[in-house]
Length: 88
Ligand code: SF4
Image (cartoon, rainbow, N blue to C red; front, side, top):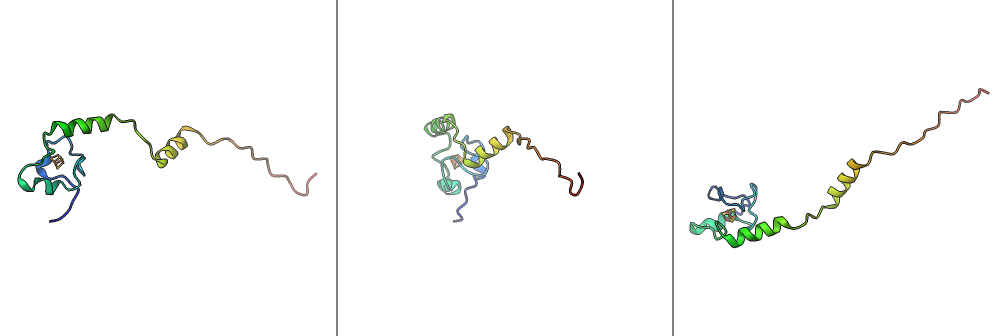
């Protein structure tokens, strides 16, 4: 069986379906092998997902760097005019 993280058509109405992957299972296709998924309409799983969503967001180093870059304009640096050579 092909292992894919992509939810299948039967996952359409599930709240754990995040479009390109399932929040709960690594392989949604294998969950539907017995005609039903244990995560579908499972209130415990939905509650866990809601609790996970409520957790404070931890930003990655890349996100922090991007945010810092956009928040602070580059400081103006003084560039002295070029000294003229040979003229007094
Ligand atoms: S929990 Fe089950 S029904 Fe819901 S998205 Fe995952 S595999 Fe699909």
